[in-house]
Length: 130
Image (tube, rainbow, N blue to C red; front, side, top):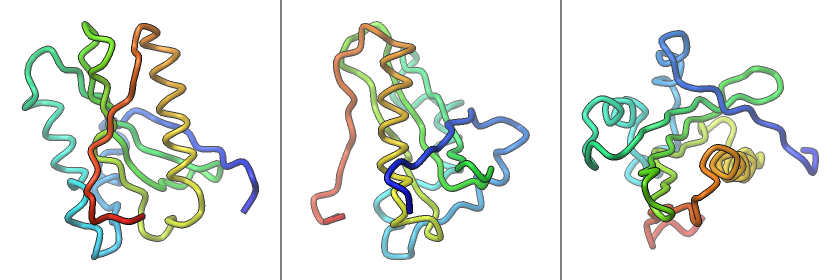
């Protein structure tokens, strides 16, 4: 694997959402991350409140293979309420640095589109050593 992994964050749309539903983490990781279907439902239901925006993205590599999914949740009236949600790299692409490249891309996206933001939050499970 090269030292610099390139990925593309492509908004989840009616053209790619069904492919995203097929993404799977390893069986022992299922309790760490919501399914893509649950994440996409949040876009409509807005469980965190009407002030939050939900931005779901499919993660593609340079070969145009779908390698994962991530959703950014934000309240742009704040400087601190920016969240990385529903982040998953498909089991077949794990261990190839796509996760790190995605986090870097999400940070870059937020910095470019929400310049007043001061932090990116991520909920973690203490028993998830990786």
